[in-house]
Structures are given as structure tokens and as C-alpha cells.
Length: 292
Image (cartoon, rainbow, N blue to C red; front, top):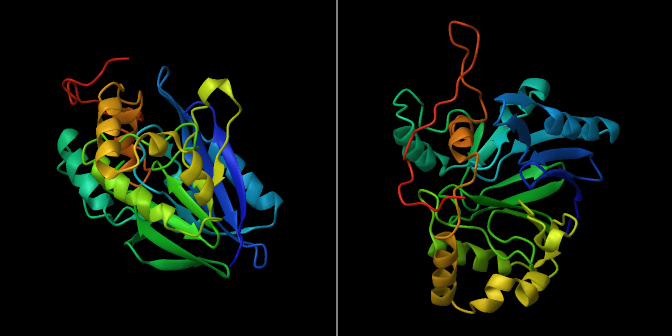
């Protein structure tokens, strides 16, 4: 089985991990889940994270073939559109992003938003394959955290986004619009059915106990050590524990900022007559949610 090179880039502001995945033979690569920097206090955007990814590609003489998102993120802006503008590489996401677009276009009252996935160059469905150089990449539909979540399996490496976290952090929340703890359980079981030595690369690390950031484990380690799976050996127990925990979690601080960008392929709003761009924040969109 092919073993891609994986370089991870941790963003401490959002606890997100971005990846450059490359074929050591052909030097082809893909970027997965890139972050566009945003400071909610000042409303400022920047490209420090995305430029670091591009620097890595250049410094290692790689050829960028894909810019991939695993789902429309609720905690950071996607840098996919920015990276495409710099490189011309195609951007892609899961085909069920259309379902997420329809939900959030209503929340934002955006009937003008094309809710057909046309913001991306390719929409992946379950079972689709593509390549990074000579490495075949399989797509697994992995809903639960969102309706549109997918997992990329490149050789011996699986990029599992917000399904499994590191074993001491457990699993992802499933209470966003369209989320489902039961669907998350099924998605996790499909991931854990991969070969035991498959490398698992997560989408976030919240550093429990203040430890240093981590992002890589294996299927076998997740089965043996994941705290939420150990607490809930079956579907019903997992759903009960996950839903109970989710009821205590406040919404991510950037969810209302980020989703309007991320359902639009990472494109920022067009400048208005004064040359400035504006975000739209619906009030009381999540009645009854926990406050931080």
C-alpha cells in the first residue's frame, strides 16, 4: 500500500490541523482543510496559515494537484478560494454540501446563494476515487458532525476531520443543523473497519490537560483507547453520551461568521459600494443553546 508523506500544520487560534499530503515518488500533493485567518474582534482577515502551506509546497518542490475540504467548517474560514487564486489548483468537497447550503442559506436569508455546489470544481460522493500522483484516494461519506462530511483515504492515511479526535479527546459533536449522533456512530464504525495500521489524521486537537498538539493515531489505537468509544461500546450508549455532552456545549464562537463563507467555497463577500466587505450575523438562530 502506498504511504504518502503527511505534513501537519496546527493553527492554535482554532485548534485546527491542516495537511499537505504528498506522493514521495511523483511529488504531487494535496492540501486538506486549509485555514484562512480571521480575527473576530477586529474583523480582520489574513493569509498566514495558507501562505505557510504554499511555502511548504515550494520548499519541498511539490506540485499541488488538489485543494480539499472535508466539510463546511464551523470554526474557521476555509482558505480554499484563496489558494485556488494563487495556484489554479481545483477545489473540492463532499457532494452533500448542497444540503448544507440549503439549510444555511435559509438561516442567513440568502435566496441569491447558488445552493448547487457550483462554487467547487468537484463534488465527491461516497465511493469516488481520485489520485494524488500515483496514490489513489478513496472517498468515504462520513456524516454526523455535518451532513456533508467526508473522509479522504490516501494509501495508508485517513483524514477523518471531525469524527474521531485523538483518543484522549474522544469524538466530535453532532448537534449542528443537520448533525446526528447516530450517523456519527455509523461513520466512525466505517472508519474503524479500515486496516488496523491505517494512520488516522484528525481535524482538531483541543490539547486536553494542556499537552502539546497531536494529530496522528491509528485505527488500532482508536479502538483500544478512544475515551468515548470505551465509555459507550454500542450505538445506543454512544448516542446517549454524545447527545448529553452536546447539550452542554456552546456553539463555536465563529460558526455564524464562518458558515456564510464556507458554504460559498471559501469566497469572502463581495465589496459593497464603500469598498468594504460585510458579514451577516443572524440573531437567535440557535434558541436554547448553551451559553459560554
